[in-house]
Length: 309
DNA sequence: CGCGCAACCTGTCTGC
DNA sequence: TGCAGACAGGTTGCGC
Image 1 (cartoon, rainbow, N blue to C red):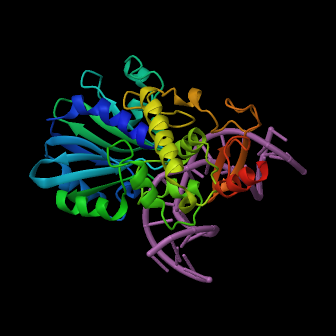
Image 2: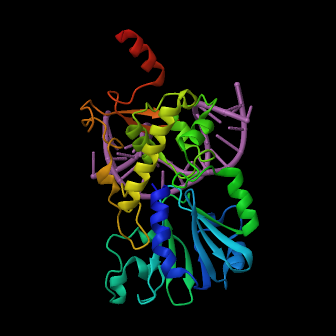
Image 3: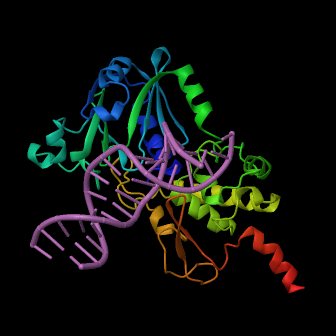
């Protein structure tokens, strides 16, 4: 599902293509896309405006527009944002589903299903941004820039790939938390951008048990977790994100990070570090994959040391 | 306030 | 073969 690496991959692809372009048309095909606002409110706020920046914050993708406006999009679980290049033949939504009908070549290697098209943004060079979403959880909001900053300040924690995340700051964020480490990582208001996939991969790298209380970490654990988070996210970025199911990048391509998973979706397979069998448990209602052999519970660790003596 | 869980959705897979 | 039910997970909102 789209987490930080997937959204950042899309952002990096879009930026050089759409920066400085003007949005000349907005078509919302699914009114849920703008919920709770009416589609017309978003259309009015966005249409005719120039794109001044393409940003990401956590899992949100932001188009900063002229006169202080911003269009904020979230892909949730099955959302995709696809760029239709200017030189590709234009068509209706139906034509886009089957470009062959226009006598046009395939535009994309492995595009999301355009039958789930929810909105189109037409740019002044003839290109288009297409938002597709099978499950209709994805959405878009038009906001003033200052409103947006307040919105994010209230909801989102530190960016894990910025210098803000250190062992000390992580320890402080986790201090007093009784929630399991897995839930702590999924909570966007402490650290922003980690979802179910990279939480599992980060905890495995850090050799930490997903059920250990977040507040039981000591500095060495926080440092290991910080490293695990950064390694997992950076490897995912180098691989263009994970395409387990629906995710496609802005060019309709698949990421390859799913081939690099160490534990996520690997139930029953051998741990690449110690050879134990990888297990799946449910934490906070989410499938959680971990190695019972080398991801130790923080509480047990002391007892084990004591027992060894 | 922190935590856990249901709800929001629909496509896909599983089991009878 | 058909169909009911489980499952997938990011975020919000609610109850404890």
